[in-house]
Length: 65
Image 1 (tube, rainbow, N blue to C red):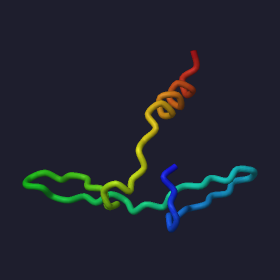
Image 2 (image 1 turned 120 degrees about the horizontal axis):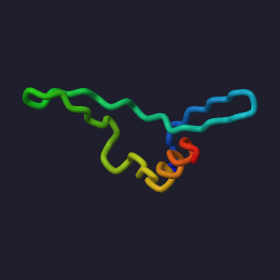
Image 3 (image 1 turned 60 degrees about the horizontal axis):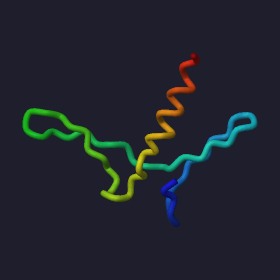
Protein backbone atom coordinates (compact mmCIF):
# COMPACT_ATOMS: atom_id res chain seq x y z
CA UNK A 1 0.00 0.00 0.00
CA UNK A 2 3.00 2.30 0.13
CA UNK A 3 2.46 3.22 3.78
CA UNK A 4 5.50 4.22 5.79
CA UNK A 5 5.91 5.82 9.22
CA UNK A 6 4.74 9.41 8.95
CA UNK A 7 2.41 8.82 5.99
CA UNK A 8 -0.61 11.11 6.28
CA UNK A 9 -3.95 9.31 6.06
CA UNK A 10 -7.55 10.36 5.60
CA UNK A 11 -10.38 8.38 7.22
CA UNK A 12 -13.94 8.37 5.87
CA UNK A 13 -16.74 6.60 7.70
CA UNK A 14 -20.11 5.91 6.06
CA UNK A 15 -22.68 3.78 7.92
CA UNK A 16 -20.73 0.51 8.26
CA UNK A 17 -17.78 1.26 5.96
CA UNK A 18 -14.40 2.74 6.87
CA UNK A 19 -12.29 4.04 3.98
CA UNK A 20 -8.58 4.74 4.54
CA UNK A 21 -6.69 6.73 1.89
CA UNK A 22 -3.27 8.37 1.65
CA UNK A 23 -3.28 12.15 1.87
CA UNK A 24 -1.19 13.45 -1.03
CA UNK A 25 -0.95 16.98 -2.38
CA UNK A 26 -2.73 17.53 -5.70
CA UNK A 27 -0.70 17.83 -8.90
CA UNK A 28 0.37 21.28 -10.10
CA UNK A 29 -0.41 22.87 -13.46
CA UNK A 30 2.74 24.46 -14.92
CA UNK A 31 3.56 26.16 -18.19
CA UNK A 32 6.34 24.60 -20.29
CA UNK A 33 6.88 26.67 -23.38
CA UNK A 34 3.44 27.27 -24.89
CA UNK A 35 1.84 24.27 -23.19
CA UNK A 36 0.35 23.61 -19.78
CA UNK A 37 1.42 20.32 -18.20
CA UNK A 38 0.44 18.55 -15.00
CA UNK A 39 3.38 17.94 -12.68
CA UNK A 40 3.13 15.73 -9.58
CA UNK A 41 3.77 17.59 -6.35
CA UNK A 42 5.07 14.54 -4.44
CA UNK A 43 8.81 13.83 -4.42
CA UNK A 44 9.99 11.24 -6.98
CA UNK A 45 9.89 7.68 -5.68
CA UNK A 46 7.28 8.36 -2.98
CA UNK A 47 4.15 7.83 -5.08
CA UNK A 48 2.76 4.28 -4.85
CA UNK A 49 3.00 2.06 -7.91
CA UNK A 50 -0.42 1.40 -9.47
CA UNK A 51 -1.73 -2.17 -9.29
CA UNK A 52 -2.67 -2.63 -12.95
CA UNK A 53 -4.13 -6.12 -12.46
CA UNK A 54 -6.45 -4.83 -9.69
CA UNK A 55 -7.52 -1.89 -11.86
CA UNK A 56 -8.37 -4.21 -14.76
CA UNK A 57 -10.32 -6.54 -12.45
CA UNK A 58 -12.23 -3.62 -10.96
CA UNK A 59 -13.16 -2.40 -14.43
CA UNK A 60 -14.31 -5.89 -15.46
CA UNK A 61 -16.64 -6.05 -12.46
CA UNK A 62 -18.29 -2.80 -13.57
CA UNK A 63 -19.49 -4.36 -16.82
CA UNK A 64 -21.68 -7.44 -16.39
CA UNK A 65 -21.60 -10.09 -19.10
